Image (cartoon, rainbow, N blue to C red):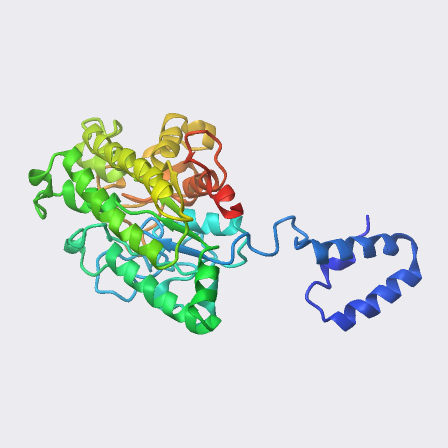
Length: 392
């Protein structure tokens, strides 16, 4: 079979293509057929892999915690860092600050949206690079400012919103005026995943925080959603329109929760999961409220809790053999301390649902990211998934 000539010519100048056109056309036969294919590729906007060459949206902005942090904590004085091996052992760039052996969910989503590079961290992104999007996520961060303080430095949700405002000012300068910037930013995708640390490193940590004694789970969810709604409204005021809100996952099934509170080391801690579900129910209702009351708002809810439930209930269907322990870590379930520097992790990493005491491994992140982008169940996303959000 003949190798397509365009495998070698993508990226040359227009004059090169004119010369090539004349040469191929004069040869006729098989090469003449490939000329037609080349023209189709160049004008269709698709690459030879079948993946859209131009991203489906101009930019992708990410807000969150350690589940999607990709280096913003590296320069902070903090215990919540992952810029050392074995973190990144399966990632092409090695340890970057991602709390995973490889890709995070937003890396997967960025790929599916058609970006040719992962969205860079706010800490190191400058100039024209911000026009493709920025990742503001910070490990240990929460909706509440005090959340995660026992771990040291972190960029709270309020801080991430402020950083986005700085980015908006830069976009205005780059594009020339506020109107052009607003139009540009309204077409981008924004994913926001906050709340996990407000439970893990606040409500269920009575040695450091009083919220667990101060509020019932219902009251705490109300307090969180009230503050979260204000933060999200501010993002909207700054120009965000297509916003995917990522629900809190099953914190009660993490190796850390199992190590501390599960008698058999495998049964999920139900009171933690129940509190997470209350928050998620409120978050889904918030999506409905925003879509009904904010002009041009297109909010969606990603049911990370439900997707994760599927992985736990049917692990073998997804290739997992271990769901209650980290691939690396220390103590019971490898869940009492996260991966130590230069620690040797498990060899069969794709068979472990969790990478460390708190975070899913790349294999799970790929599934969660794919289903966030393109729902495989009617409960995965509401009212639509990220793929359809990008098309709006």
